[in-house]
Image (cartoon, rainbow, N blue to C red; front, top):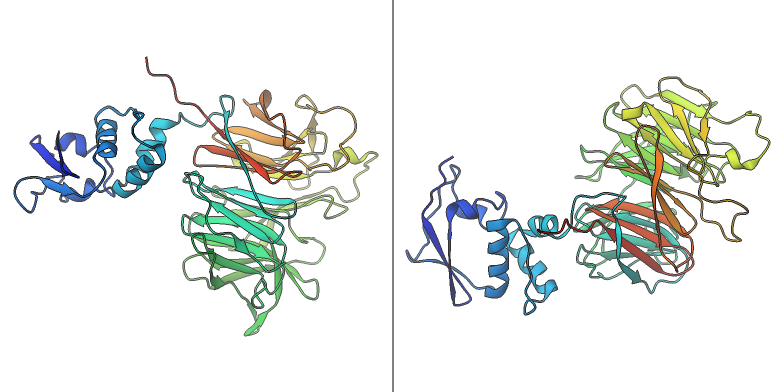
Length: 442
């Protein structure tokens, strides 16, 4: 690497700044400053031979330059924080700002940073976090998109078609699954612009060279840009469709096999280690719960579990959500009392090992219950229950902390991404943002 230690001059909005090539190299290759270097990290010379001129805000530039020098973020009172974020996006330093502003994600150190009140009619359906710290929220037939600065974009309206699930594709696109026709055609799934709300692409199901109408349900993505969606046809045919995220073309379809119910799956999860898809159809959508791992390469079910025929005497042992934990070779399920259950992934049909040590709620369910949800992030297990989210850690998944806000009602969904946890409340159109505060500078 041939980084030069020469002094570099910038003229930013009429103010002169001096720094070194070594400091600028702390920015990533895709940043504004990374473009000033050649492939060998040698600094290019300014066109006028004097200094690099940048027609931007000099106060924000000073803050960002100090961030590159020290790794610390100090925002003086004369610099609006929102303006600094926009300038950081221009320079490609938004990742540096986020890392300096918030500490590493830790469920036991999360603090409520903000609550956002929506204006959408109907109960909350789903909330999904983006990897950059933004989120999209579904209320009935509408989806509201917020960037990582929590600025709201124009809402997406499905013309009274209820949203079943949403997926954050990238900062520019949101994937929505809904009933057939999506309000605008025969497709039950569409890609929308997060900035304008325009429908960009409809994902069709093709069988025997004919486009079929279908309702799309649960969504998930794989690292190689595949989209998976549970599908239901007009004649109650069930299956899992697969599309290429880049081209939008259908590339595969897994039909429900006799003797095993995929149903309208509540949960899809891609497992990188086994390159399989977890499909869960849970109570109360079905009287019996079905969880399976599908291998699309072999078109086969490689692992399965169901409580069909199990001697259940009370309803509390019904699984309400499920998540695979590959490192532990198990699937974790949760019931309506937040008892955690574990199923061995190495043995199909193995019974659930229930544990009530994590139970937080006692007594009756509320009049309008929100069934619990599960998430796994950075080796920590999260479970929502009524108006709180519990955090479990360690090999025995011991309850270590609980996130709770004093108002807003039960939590119907939550999601983690971009070092933030978003919790959507059902009784009011409000969602909370939880963040890990940065470590104090000594």
